Image (cartoon, rainbow over all chains, first blue to last red; front, side):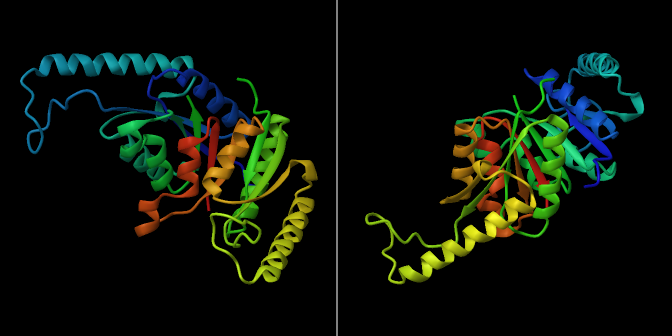
Amino acid sequence: MSNYKHILLAYDYSAGNDQMASKAQQLAQQHQAKLSIVHVLDNIAMPDVSYGTVINLNQPQEYAALEQQRIKFITLTQTLAIGLSNCWLIWGNPKQEIVELATHEQVDLVIVGSHGRHGLARLLGSTANSVLQYAGCDVLAVRL
Amino acid sequence: MSNYKHILLAYDYSAGNDQMASKAQQLAQQHQAKLSIVHVLDNIAMPDVSYGTVINLNQPQEYAALEQQRIKFITLTQTLAIGLSNCWLIWGNPKQEIVELATHEQVDLVIVGSHGRHGLARLLGSTANSVLQYAGCDVLAVRL
């Protein structure tokens, strides 16, 4: 088989993500692949959109929250020894942004955490399920 | 990280399955893992169930079809050099049987083909999606 050339780790800071990162690093090493990492911010209101979304009345705090996330993410990527040019901090919907980034960056393996979901969350579908369904490449879902 | 110890390849003979098998073999080698293979027969009517399912009026032909599948599967496992004790030919619903076998055999990575599904099939969900949702272990979905 041809080895994976570009692996994308979708990181969301939930429990088990460190183990997932370590699997990603090992796979990248085994396949001599480029390793990229993405974290999608879906819990911070977007402060600077002038049309079509909620107007935020508390912009300075949102910017501060964003800056905090940025610093947290940079610290993580340094720990994982991933160069900044392979690190992506994106604002939006995780399912959509991960698939779009994977396509754009010609990723051939996405590694995503898979939570055992129940009830409503199962009906709505997990990020892992959506990535699997829409990504044009292989997907490794790591059970968290 | 701890390596994978037992990898289960879910094989369905569709296009791209050979490439998936080769990925499974490579991963098993890299992780020094045991490699098992399962094929679930979901297209042959069950001939010998006396209660609760359709009574089949054409049993001899069904048995012949089953025997044919068995021989085809054994040939495949020989090509892949997987010992017979690690080969599973199961009658039933693929999603369910793969998850049950993985649990029973303490598999820590299931490799399953992922078809790009559209329309009704997307609504019904793919085998890969269901395995991901219900398996207690990691799942590698290989895009076919």
